[in-house]
Image (cartoon, rainbow, N blue to C red):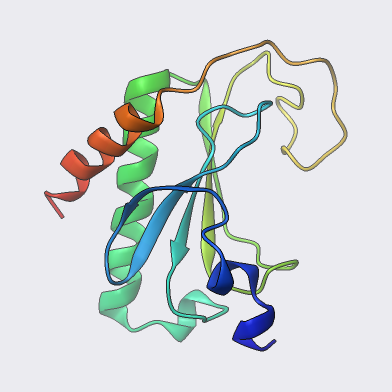
Length: 139
């Protein structure tokens, strides 16, 4: 895939909450999954094994910090972490807070909905961004 055709290379694909030279954390606009974030490696690579050891460690620190921030702000029943890349072969991680009353729980978010999910507000973008900046200043 050319980087010109890669949506993660050509657009932000959501509201950027935090970024550095290596990666960015974006807020996914999905009303069924408030707090859903994506951690995107900035360079166009498809697999974790395309990164150096140092880069992999850096990326996973950002994923873990994002998970921790979402857990602290939202207290979900579970956090799902997923790196698929079947549709968009650009390295990125989904960080998805899950609740017992969400549309798909306990099934994956990409399965058929089991119910109408409860309405839940996401933390304000400013709150998420500030918490991420604080958590990632330690890394």
